[in-house]
Image 1 (cartoon, rainbow, N blue to C red):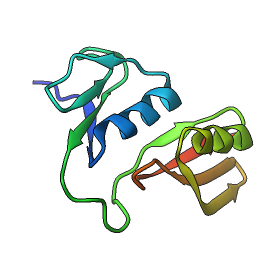
Image 2 (cartoon, rainbow, N blue to C red):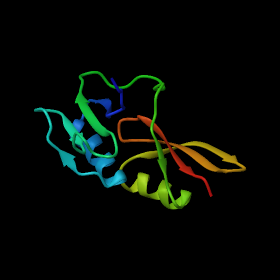
Image 3 (cartoon, rainbow, N blue to C red):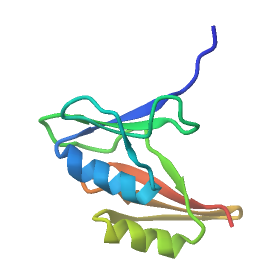
Length: 117
């Protein structure tokens, strides 16, 4: 039996707002979804699906799992996230192999923009 990673589920108070942000950022179309939920991608896609699950409580504190999003230009990536309703957390790491900046989506879920040079 082979195991494989097929998706990531993100809890959201405003599923539509957060899913729309991620859909635009990653250029991923919506797939078939359960009522009240939004799935980006389809079962069997090359990339794992992103699933947005409705919850009633807002996010508190730093999440312990986050997505890394590769970008060609770090400044353009930051500008795109901000234009889509996300924000720059102020955290930036410059390494010999590239740059990593910590961003947040409209509900505060942290993720990294990564440019490996």
